[in-house]
Image 1: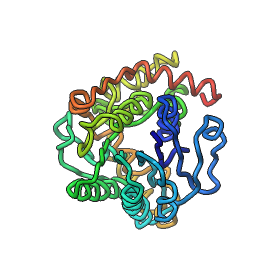
Image 2 (image 1 turned 60 degrees about the vertical axis):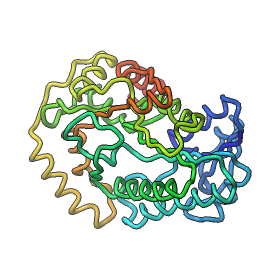
Image 3 (image 1 turned 120 degrees about the vertical axis):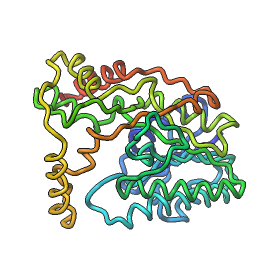
Length: 325
């Protein structure tokens, strides 16, 4: 089969494109003009330049494809107005679905986020748990899912997955946490008893591929997480153990840090400067994010293999190899 992957030059998209290629599929990548694509091309992935917000570009990329894996999204930055997130994450999704119809694609696999659920008061949350987006990125993802539901109701063949916190070799979103623990500078905000459900990129790509290959996936939403959901205290202890340093011991209460984050946002966001501290970072310490992945296990045969301890060790080894620690 011929697959189109949007966002294939990103972390998750590049891993997924290579997995699909290894399974014997032809893979085309829709990437922004000027993006670095040398590694994708060397792997044998066809490059199609275009903008997700330009319908003609997306139709051109989708032509001749059997499936579309829609991974691309506008993530969190201070440099874009709120409208940008809607244009890319909702308007771009509409362009993908329209292009899939025009090309006669067998199905679309749409990437949402576990973040649409916000703080989970009664963990673990399954796919039917209420939405409570905490920022414009998550709000745009909720809106994109609403659009997808409308199209599914009209008979379009779409599967949706919501990943837990993605990590693994090649990603740097957790690098600051690893570095601060390695240098003995990490300070826990609050109790550290909240749970963070992570998913290693290898397990995630297994789940995404199943969304594309299993007939049971069509019309469904799946949360894709790892096999365990440790507390922040446990995660920090795992990182310290793999780095062979003492576990963090310093703690501060939540409220003064939260107030400082709100002040930073008030001063920086109007100037389109990424705040050094913002409330979303504080929510990392205070929000429960534990999920029930039984639907994916039962309907897709999803079987995540990489425990948090193993994934953390592998990620730390990659950071070391890159000279980042």
